[in-house]
Image (cartoon, rainbow, N blue to C red; front, side, top):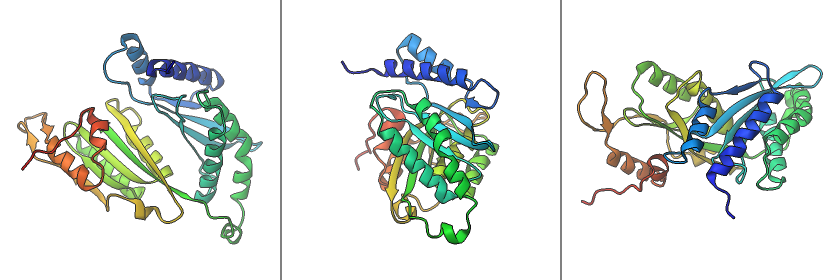
Length: 291
């Protein structure tokens, strides 16, 4: 019998409960305060739109020196039937070593039995295997230059919000994208859509920065990962980070409560080889008006 989304979400909540018992101290496991309640509400009603994907961060102490390694977790709705998105990061690691650590982590997770909960296993693996990478981070740049080249990963994240209006929020979005060398766009208005593409760790950092401390009406609807041995710049669909605004339906009242022209947005997506994302974002198939 096929496993349902509801069954998967129930398992995700059980695993979070287990992790909270393993990491009870403040700051050890960071979880949006509405993340679990939103899933619980969905499970009670079994109707309506799916809740945001469950996302949390676990701070780990590694080795006798208790170096800090953070495991970032993003769970697709069908996890554990599909693999989780995991990323380990540490300020003590150079970029190349961080990529190597995550390549080995992904390889280990892919070797596990499909359909089993594996975040606890990933936590233990990171604690057991991060130390050599942390120790090697102190080697000279000459030694580092001789390391085997690791494939780079381009990540493209499609983020949906009920609306994006506030100037301070837009400034935070654009400043973060520029700082992290991310390309894409921010569609202002109602609804609001953000696309960022760049190095995997930079996209994860962008998502962490703009979402916290508490942006409730936002969710990451879709993630694309593309591995390459060359430069990720050759895989980008956008040349910069655009301030995207289209002619709106309705007026510009005091609340700026207006809807963007989604037909123009669909055309923009198709021009950037991303027309398929329209249905993922809005749950409907996009069709351009015939001339």
